[in-house]
Image (cartoon, rainbow, N blue to C red; front, side, top):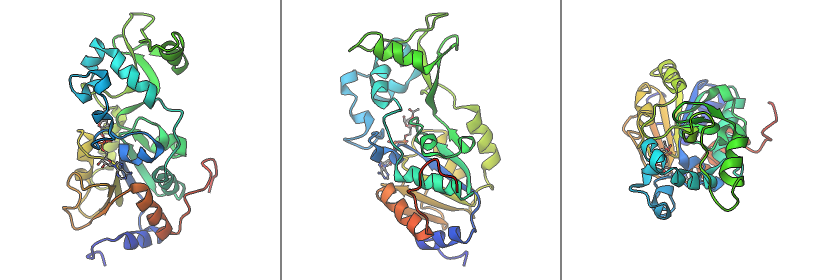
Amino acid sequence: DTQLKPTLESVAEQLKEGKFKNVIFMVGAGISTSAGIPDFRTPGTGLYSNLQRLNLPYPEAVFDISYLRRNPLAFYTLASELYPGKFEPTDFHKFMRTVDRKGLLRRLYTQNIDTLERIAGVSGEKIIEAHGSFAKNHCIDCKTEMSNEELKRIVWESNPGKTTIPKCKKCRGIVKPDIVFFGEGLPRAFFDSMDEDFPESADLVIVAGTSLTVSPFSQLPEMVDDDCIRILFNMDAVGDLGTRDNDLLILGDCDKNVRKFAELCGWSLDEESEEET
Ligand code: OAD
């Protein structure tokens, strides 16, 4: 039956039977839009079509390291809206947590900086935050760390109603959260895990909520072995997903579709995040 084209039903059946023990997720901003966080590239609602007020030379400049040196206010204006703390995990995050709880998760590669994977309760050591996160902050010149409390105090509280740029106490360089900007390298853990995981470690790959436009993350799905089933939960087809016999495209809202997938597996997504099973 390995010759048959996978369907949501057949993959759910195999997941239930314990056929897949090494599930790898590759996700992006689309899994967090239902939490109220805009994605980047959806026309109209995406961040990059709503940054006119920041007067950027081009939208991606807001996450560009050399632009940050010249105009840090643009990033910090946006950061006040994106800063974690006010968003809740989505059904898609809950699905990933469930896969982890069942002992089937090998790795979760995320491009997102909202830390909703951690907040949902996915094991920290399985998460690769490929584009970093707001968890820590460092001076872009001398790398001295600044705590989140201090950064928040300086940026938003020191000068009410105004955004203040946090500067390094040692060298006066600009302090920035450890988000990977254009012009910076990805974390070492990304490349180490990639070497361990591909091509053959995964038995099921689930790609979701990403346009697969930013390299090197965009190359992950292609590195997966040909025998491995790859499912895409996304609004539209992306990357090379759909070009292999073992690909399954589930187009539309990823929360709605993953809920259906979980039901087919006989799994409930609504357990508390603290609960151990
Ligand atoms: P994009 O905005 O490029 O792509 C989001 C994808 O998710 C699009 O294909 C949407 O159609 C899809 N999508 C949105 N809502 C969805 C929903 N409810 N259900 C299913 N699909 C949905 O976001 P990313 O691919 O994550 O990098 O962007 C990659 C990187 O570009 C980001 O990490 C960021 C950005 O520049 C940095 O800032 C370094």
